[in-house]
Image 1 (cartoon, rainbow, N blue to C red):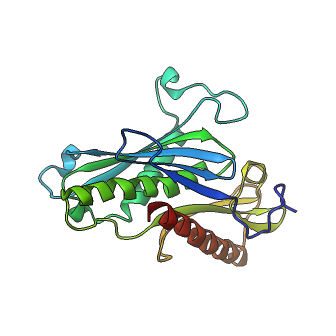
Image 2: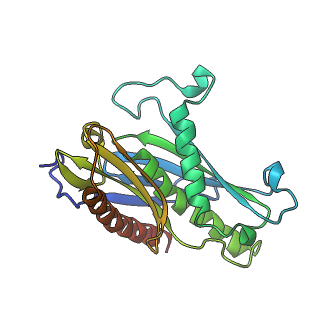
Length: 237
């Protein structure tokens, strides 16, 4: 029995509320159970120096957690004077995941920065950030298309992410914190709407896992991604 009472292949309740901030070109609040992430996308008419005069655009991301997103207060990273290695790893993952769904030549020489701020954490914050970050990105690109600044849609496909793991000896979908903290195996699956793999992160947290167990996790991830893509489509239609 899962702590939440969910079935092994059951996602947490997903909601995506769009246009939640006034100034960002694209924004949403994604709620995956008790994990809530504010995602905003900001357009800039510039690219990093290594892309100047290349004709290519860029999508990057930043990630952070509010001090009381978790059970006890965390110190702000700005107060420490540097980002943690975990934060840097997660925001790089978000950025390269979202770039996998973009035709950068169609975007042109402009940058879109996706900011993902965790308001409340209950496991799966990087997955929620990628899934919500795509929605914010989609909305920002819609504004470019509507204004006529670009004429070809640079978004190739949906990008979404979900966690799967081995909990109490059983493959389960969409781990919350009680499961994540005790999982023998923990994995994050980032995929396109068409089911193509963008990135897989799977590790033996407490016990090694077999090929059959991995295949079971992969199957659960495909189911979860399909549900997330449907939620993205409903939020941006």
